[in-house]
Length: 373
Image (cartoon, rainbow, N blue to C red; front, side):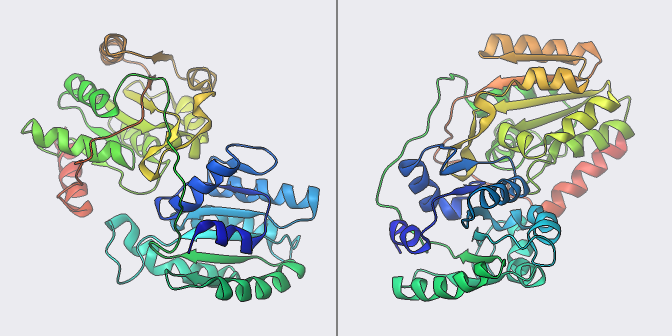
């Protein structure tokens, strides 16, 4: 189904969400139609944030907003759905559009498999009526679904469309870019050259894939790295947990801007603990690149200032490789909690692969290595 027909059938004039590759057609349509427009479209930090923002829109206008997300974001909406939106509380109607990664019977990456199995069950447990949209869904089908959903909205209830792979298409073209010059894979190459045999925790998406391939190309083992292939936004907290238990061992965290924003409170917790052995690197391309390139607010946010106000003892922003190398070496020798924000361009190799070891194998090798330190 063409996403223009999908949007027309929904008839909403406000969307907020977190981008998803399964919803690339919708995301690109929204950017092509509205861009980032406070009256019509906002990309939020996490899915709970989207839900609360959409609730505010409904309170101000009386209209039904749309919240879009990958199904991994269902966990982030459980609290506001149950304690804010539900008809036993405020009865705030909302339409969720959810990309179904890990759908049973459809090949996907390991971090999506269980989430895919429980996607519909979670909606049922939250009391959210849903319809699955497939490539075979017609405009007439969608119109009938919306008739049913509008009855629910009138009663202060929520509903959801669960979007199967290739169910939506977009006939336009949109390009995402920024003015930065450093490449993420090259930034990671510089990091591992300095980190040596220190443990590294890397964030979800292309960063972990690039780290894995850099180790392969260098003939190194993968025991040094914990690849956080799922659980977006939590790599810095994982790194903190390790750093606090291994105070004599330097720990590196390779984070992304979208991930750092998703659970920004983690930086406040890290700053409160001030682990002297933790180096937190945020590679900032101001985009959700792994799922298509839609922008984040990290292009205007002052991550260095945020880190300093959270209690990081050192924080610096770098825009070229010489400055990056200097910052990495300084952090390695300083022995204090440090944040390095590395400004990064969009883009990755077209032949970028995925880890050839399983998540369980990664965990076991990494834990064994930590135990040896």
